[in-house]
Image (tube, rainbow, N blue to C red; front, top):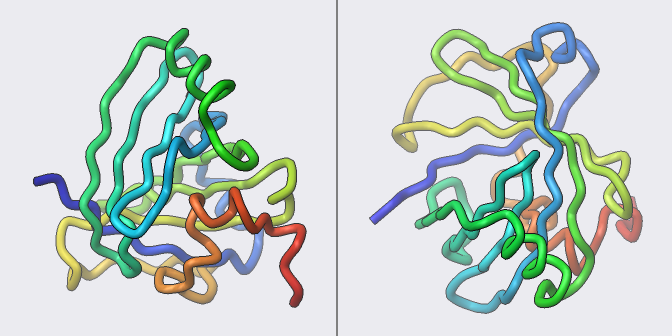
Length: 157
């Protein structure tokens, strides 16, 4: 079984930008959601992926991901995805033994910037850069599957 251990944080400032190694633009939507899992299709550059992730809160979840033909992924995104399509640029920031993924959202989620780090163990120690803000790993509003139905532009601060 594939396990994802991921922590999410808000960003305090733009200092991370000077350390970006590369970036990718993502368009993704959800084929279904529910109590047990979410099923996502993602287009990134010239590749498409189908992702199945357990619908549990917290930093550890079961996850499976498969590359699929690009034309089929684009058709799934257009025909079958419920709710809005998430659009974001993901920036990769290497820091010591980890790579931070900084998601800068577009569209209805414009203004939202979230940093993620994948870990090998739930108790793994990692360097917290100065630009890292509050942890939001346990806040479902920041899950992409929730941003489809309740985009950032509708949040009341």
